[in-house]
Each structure stands twice: as structure tokens, then as C-alpha cells.
Length: 129
Image (cartoon, rainbow, N blue to C red; front, side, top):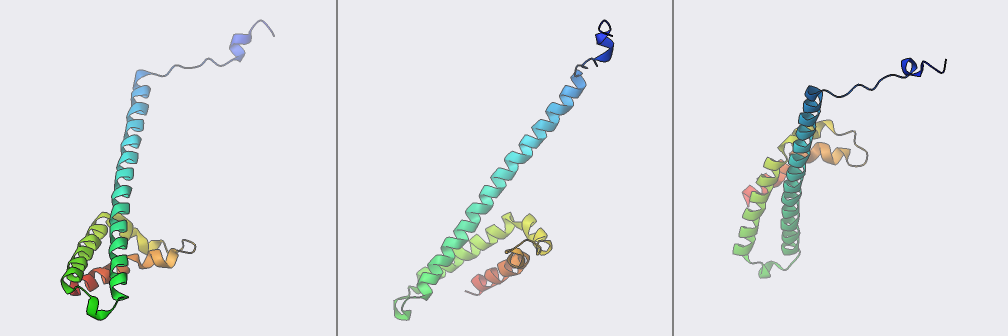
């Protein structure tokens, strides 16, 4: 029993060059996809923050005295808001296509489901000036 221990133990099989190459290619693809996702999410974040800043400025203007409103400055801000909304819609298009199916998400589901319509309304309002 103690003399034939090698037959009881399975021998480790070495990785072939082809297997290592396949694993390496798969890992490289995964790293490339992760890097692309990080860049895309950053662009989406920057676009969303730009829209948020525009809306905050518009709310400040709307809360002030009517006689003190700079019409030309406000018109420029509305044009900027429309451009930022268009940019957000272009960058977030893949998520906007999935949004109607994400109504099940706890707490935010109804907001996520309504995101495409809300973005269209915001763009239409900014276009109307």
C-alpha cells in the first residue's frame, strides 16, 4: 500500500502553449472591455454633472426677481443646457434603451423607467427656449 503512492496521486498536467494563449487573449479582452467601460462611465458622469449644473443655474435664475434676469445670458444658458442634454442622451443611449426594463429596481425603478421620456421632455423644453 505505501510503496505504490504515485499511482494513487494524480499527476498535474502542464498547460499547453495553446491553452495559455487562449487564456491570455481572454484576459486581454476582459481588460479592454473594463477599460472601455470606465471611460464610458466617466463620460456619462461628466455629461450628467454638466446638466445638473445647468439646471441649478436655471433654478437660481427662476427664483430671482424678474426685472433682474439677464435675457441674453439666460438664452445662452438654455442653449448650453440643450447641448449638454443632447450629449447626455448620445452617451447614455445604451442605458436609455434598457431603462424601460429596469422598473423593478427598488426605490429608483420608476425614475429609471421614466428616464428616456424625462430626457426627451428636458430636451424639448430647452429647444423651445
